[in-house]
Image 1 (spheres, one colour):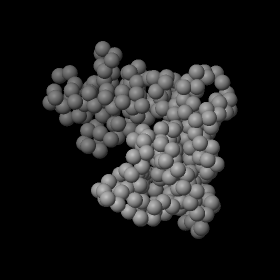
Image 2 (tube, helix red, strand yellow; image 1 turned 30 degrees about the horizontal axis):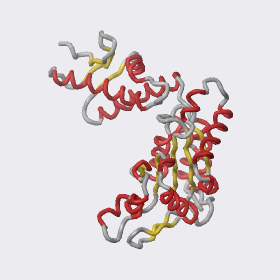
Image 3 (cartoon, one colour; image 1 turned 180 degrees about the vertical axis):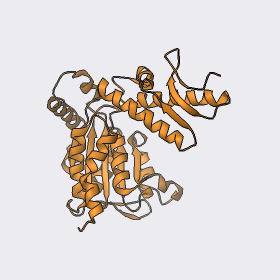
Image 4 (tube, one colour; image 1 turned 60 degrees about the vertical axis):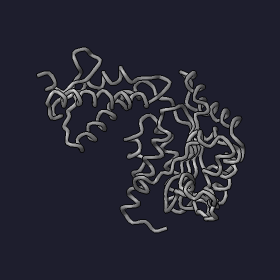
Length: 304
C-alpha cells in the first residue's frame, strides 16, 4: 500500500495524539497503535478484519474512549457502530442483530447499520448470548456476515473491538502489584469466562490499568478544558482558574468507577455555574472559579 507523506506522518504520530487524550494508558496505546498501523498499511491477515482487539479492565478507564478516538483519528467522526451486549443476552435478540426478512424496519438496529469503513464495538462482550458469539466468531474468521434479508456484509476494511469489565474487581484489590502481575491475573480471569475460540481469533488482547489519584487529577483538568471549549463553541467564554480542578476532583474522584464520575462532575459544576450566571442576567462570560462555599463553581460576575 502506498501512503502519502501526510498519511505516513499521521500514522507515526498517532501514539502521541492518543496519549494526549487518554490518560494513564500509555502501555496499552503503544500496543494498540502497532496493530492499527499494520491495518492501515495493509499488513493484516487477508480475509479478516483489519485488526481485532479485546479490551479488558475496570469501568471508566478509557476502553470505549480509546476506540472512539482512534476511529475518529484514522477514519473520521461517527464511524463507530456500537453494540451493547447487555441487549443481546437471549437467543431471540439475535434477530435484532442480524435483521429479519419479515421485519425490515428492525434491520438497521444491528449489523445492517454498517457501511463503508469503521469500527465495530461490542461492549461488555461477556454478556452476549452464545448464539451472538457464534456470529462474532464468524465475523472474526471471515470478515463476512449475511443479514436476515440475505445481504452480505464485508468487514475486511473494519476494525473490531470487544470490551469487558472482567478482572476489574481484581484490579481494584491489587494496590501495589506490578502491571505485569495484574495483566496476567486479569487475562486468566478472562480466559476462564470467555470462550477460547475468541482468544484464538482476536489480534490483540490488552489490559487497561486502573486510574490512580494522580491520573484522575490530570483527567479532571482535561475535562474542564474540554467543557469550556465546547461551551465556547456555543458563544460562552469561561476562563477557568487553576483551583477549579480542586472542586471538580473533590466531587468527581472515585477509586472504583474511574473517569466517568469525574466527567459528570466537571460537566455539572461548570454548567451549573453558567446557568446561575445566565439566570442573573449575565452573558456567560468571565473567569470561572470556586464558589465561596467550596462545593460549587461560579462565574466571576455571578454575584451582582
